[in-house]
Length: 476
Image 1 (cartoon, rainbow, N blue to C red):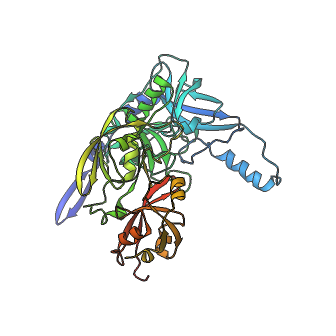
Image 2: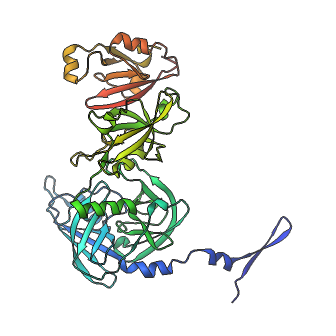
Image 3: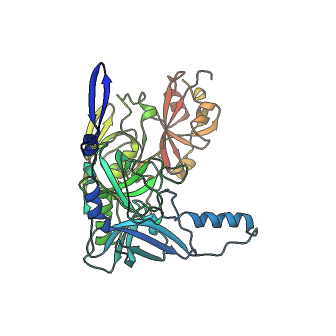
């Protein structure tokens, strides 16, 4: 039967739209599903319940859904006060996909975290016991191995070619429903969620429907290649609400290679702590708010040896632009330790490129501070709402400060400093990029600050250093 048509008068002219032609222009996912569904597996991880799973609350993960909620309800209403619950076996459900015929399977770390036993179920209904070869919580990737051969596999794509607006397809086991297929488009690439537990991942954001149990499943492009590992959703209800996030397959396969080669994952370390520049565009005479402001340089690090300084603005890393501070950690983290990186910076209004030897982030310090480029959220002393004092020699030595370096905040006197989060005992090292080593030098540095101006202070608290902006209120 010929396709039916819609007729409408537009501006007095008759417009005929072929609905059949429009439908034929939409992608057909049939071949992608038929080819790849056999390589997508259902993952079931059991734990004794003796140790609490860390459960990052990502929403697309593990829990089958009903029983835990029922148990919690019973505990609240019938549990005896002061009586701990007896440990019980817990089951986490997720997805995974086979990346080699000899039985290597990729999934999320949070699906198998804390598990005593892991099993996978293939599309042919076989259930196999899987060994956790290695995993990395920072990238949320786990590599499993089953004792089998000639298994169906997926084709690995290139996540660096992904663009907004492209179609994407997910196959997984939401709520334990094997081989469920959903589709949507790429909403954003390089999306850094700014979360403390995954600072090194720039996600692929989609509107592909992802729910609990989809975690660890593959995200495909129209060529039938895996471009991501489904990992997270944003949700207020626990279910899909249009925001899904996948780990780029390039990152995941880098983790796989490192686990196979050395049993763990190493990350590059630049040796700086950075923060957004937004608040300090005027202070730094910047044309825009792009870049990452260097708040701290780790002594002895590659950045320190290359001459990077507090107050530098990092604009690029190995040719990749840095538009915001959270862009830097993923780029540095995936860089091979020992390699040389070209870091584009802006200093005193002039751009320059600095060669920095990338170090290795200590495995016991998988945190942002002073590491791969950690991102921190970012007229008179009285006008700023604080009072400062000189630091005596003994206190300076205890704080690890050099002679003539810094002044200490003795008290908070106004809402400007209070609103900026300053506290008594904080050490101020710079004001508007000028070093201050005495109360007199501090007063001179802030002498020209007027109502409505924002003073840019470099503040040290304990072992952390960051820039703080204090805007002078009009009604002091």
